[in-house]
Length: 117
Image 1: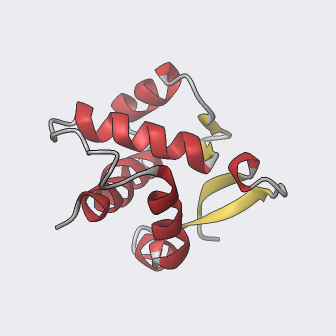
Image 2: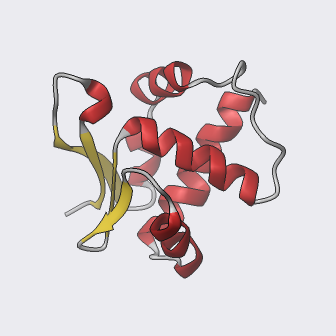
């Protein structure tokens, strides 16, 4: 499994799944994170660049070896999210990622992890 695949798996199973459960440890990590990843009305809201940074930090904090940026840079991470079936997988958790606020500069667009209605 490539570093990018490992990070994607961690994002869905260890970050998004725990965010849906309001896992206290994850809520604390998000609260300490200096970036645009936060809980708003009980849901995870983020920009992609900051989600990438948080995912790398959380991946390493969970005991995994650090991800080599040459194997998984931000552009590769963003491309992976856009080209993969993240929302299909999240459906199994009763959730999806939606655009909260679009911006011409994709790095400034906000996304929200939300429960399916």
